[in-house]
Length: 387
Image 1 (cartoon, one colour):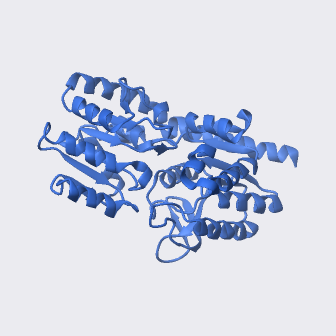
Image 2 (cartoon, one colour):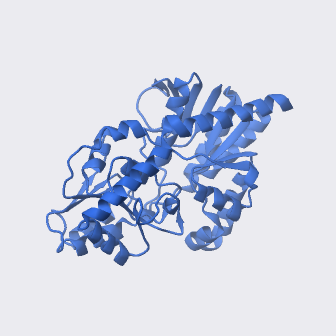
Image 3 (cartoon, rainbow, N blue to C red):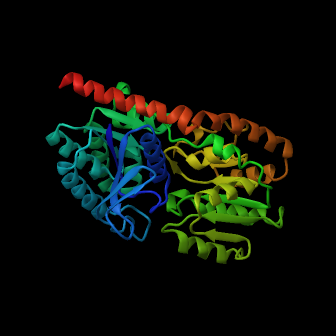
């Protein structure tokens, strides 16, 4: 089986949840004997085609900036990448093409090329935004953006959502048939993470992810500032990079937290897991999450999680508040939850036990990749029967 995963950015040259998820799936399918490709923009130096851990990596065009100064995706980048996807798939030989839903134009391009080549396209939805979101963020232009999102939902018969939350939104917001979209979450190396649980805890609160506006890290910094007088000696460490970095540093300066908030741009994977494991808390204040994989990783590592239960966030489908983590809906609730978890050891132990149990169901090798392999095989078998 010759499979191409198409996304404009490829891990580890660009760090993000979607990039990491595709990488983990690709390496494991390659280990099972598949011929697997990651197709995207060339974010690295050297040759356009590489091979890492059995996965063939193809940079089909030079990398251009993906975000504008406000941290929003650039339309011109989406169109540019989509055009190169179309040109590439007209020539390349793949049995199956799995496209990330966003940026949308690469899906439309892949569908058009696959139709001409009589190939099959699967779309993986990291998140579904929907009409209300686009109207809120783009005004009159939101109708156009929503039309494009809806067109993507119609350009193939096969869709995968990385959470039940995202699947439900695909059905409700985009009118997708429940029979055409299946939930297969991104996963974790549960056994490997379990071995890292014994790292000693430090007086540290952690965030790990992109520094983007929808992550609402401004709220986390201000909540930490309110907490400092009750829990002196703690630091807030923010791991990641993105368009909000300079603004967030300005907020840190304005609140006098220069010695207490540390920004770390990039870590190796095992270093990130050590940081999560040694932290007292992981906080995810994001308003938008298609899944929230870092939440599951923290659970597996024995670190309690506080997350924002946002309208566009799937973390509520992972966290059962008070059992395996804590969900909050305001800055005040965030401060209260952080204060309590830094003080209540009994509750912390309860959340850690619940987190272990939850995370075990997301193991890549035991649960996720076998399900994905079955879906891909069924699609190819159906294609052969109809040929």
